Image 1: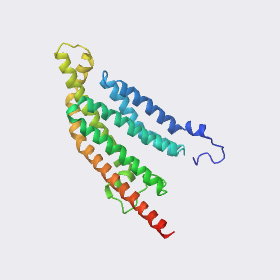
Image 2: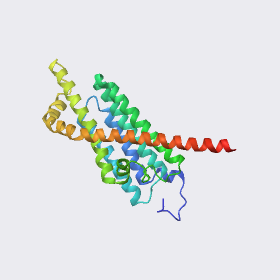
Image 3: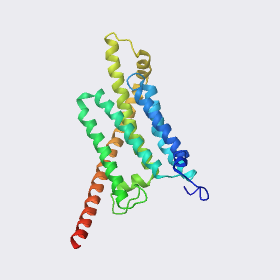
Image 4: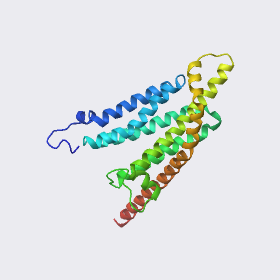
Length: 240
């Protein structure tokens, strides 16, 4: 908020900052995309993808307009976690044999980011991206290199998007073969590009695995950090 040194800023002004307005549009696009998942796969993933890409835009806007805020940062993370979790819930329904895997991915994503954010707050860090040289080099690279951050996050999302599109096409084809003609136009459009979708799935698979590994590293780091703080506070209380 350095761009408003002479202005009186209240909470309403913060809600109307440019990056936060972008954040609201991300939420709306995410909801529309999730609503269309059962019937309009291409439109659904277009809305979902734009919502995900705007994650980078709101950060650029925050720096350009000097409107970086705690609310915006939390809104950003909550939107990321919520939209990804909702897509994984749909994938669990779409692929019931692998539902447990998607449930565990949701749990890992939410718990690692929550504990990481909580530890950052308790230690007085300026940002959850503030890591020391003692932290795992991959996690430091992920948070401190914007290009790496973008590639990993984009690859992770592309894997789930491709998996959803492949699953939707397979399910709809079975229904069409049984005489249900609903969604035939979407199916034909999707099947025309299934080769590309499969290629995206294979290319993004290792990136998705890397993202889950980073979540594990983040969870372990936060757990150890919080436990060290507890031990320190326990020792202080014993001396009193």
